[in-house]
Length: 229
Image (tube, rainbow, N blue to C red):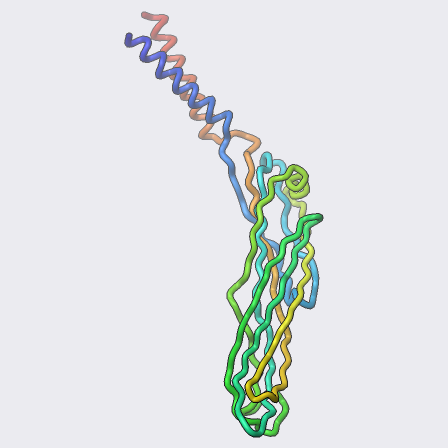
């Protein structure tokens, strides 16, 4: 009975080791692209490292795009009779393209301020005018891909790179309660990307080898005991 128990335990240990070797864990790493300043008006491209195919087999790719809103707002209240409550809204979308893949990040920002009556200086300054920045928290959009052709496009070498095209649109609306307001909005959006590669290693991890050797060792011990018995 004791021998049967030892054999059963050894078999279970070996089976566990074989299962671990047959189902390696998924690993991942993340790369970050360059930053494009003023993406809404200065379209360009992001460059980032491809997956190093020598590491193993790529299982999925997660691409996360970011944009930071920092538009410049210039306003002058031209009313000589009343102050003006200013509200400025800006919004738009930054679109990222890699081959046939396309992702868009929507953004928006709001700014409000109260201005006194016109100070006779139409210069976005003084008491009746200002220059400021519409800011907002970073906006982002994430998408994962698993298609074979897409994974192949993201796969390269330890030194190869790929690019994502960037284009942006912006709209703005400035209102003032005095009904006589001069304004100018200059949109500015920084854009960048983070790409996470999820893959299975081409070579089993050292822990997997250790488990397999331990299982084989236990089976060997049981075999020797049976032989000497």
